[in-house]
View 1: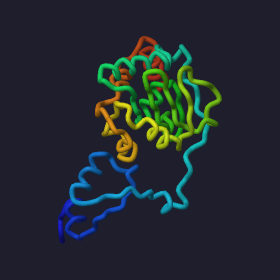
View 2: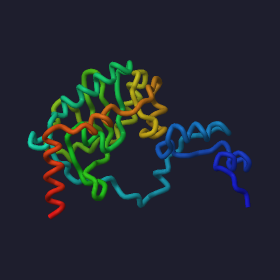
View 3: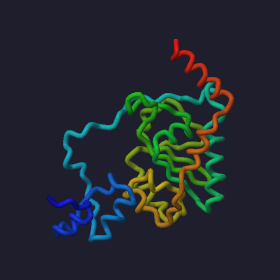
View 4: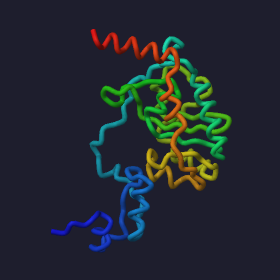
Amino acid sequence: PENLDPYTYLKKHHLYPLGTDFSILSPEDLSELEKAGEVRDISFASLLPSRPALSNNPLWDFSNPQYQDLTAQEKIERVRQKMREAGAGAHLLTSLDDIAYLTNVRGNDIADTPVFYAYLYIDLTGAFLFVNPSRLSFSIPGVTVEPYDHIVSFLKERSAVPTLVDPKECNAKLYRLLVHPIPGAAPSKLMKAIKGPKEVENIKMAQAEDGV
């Protein structure tokens, strides 16, 4: 039997033009597919009529100073400093753990992981969290909450803004909306790796409780 990589197989069997959902591909994967022919963005959502809805469970505020060394505003301002250094006017964040870290919000959308499905867009003057607004019973200082499914129209309106984005974390659909993407790792990756005194103490307490 043939032992071909997917791209060669598609080209050899004349399967172009190819229709696929850009939201399930990385920018790199899409670029590889396009080397062999035309690729069109087609939503697969209609093919899954019984697709489970996104969780609508309440999110919880994790900003209590007992648990945090920095407020969400302080964390976001540190991100803005890194944006300026990279020459970016905005930052698109799609990794759920980083969004939870920067906003000081937690959820239970994924089993055994306190994250929630969302997008976060930070510019030099504001921050926008894309999540179902009904899930929050509290406000996040400095952050505007937008409906989850508004992210595409939002980015289209700001497509010309030089935007720091990690192509390894962002799907091709959103990445392709940006006219001037600035590829790079999210600043929060290193930020959350450096624990403050309260975080260190809470880690110790959690380890002690887990060991009992």
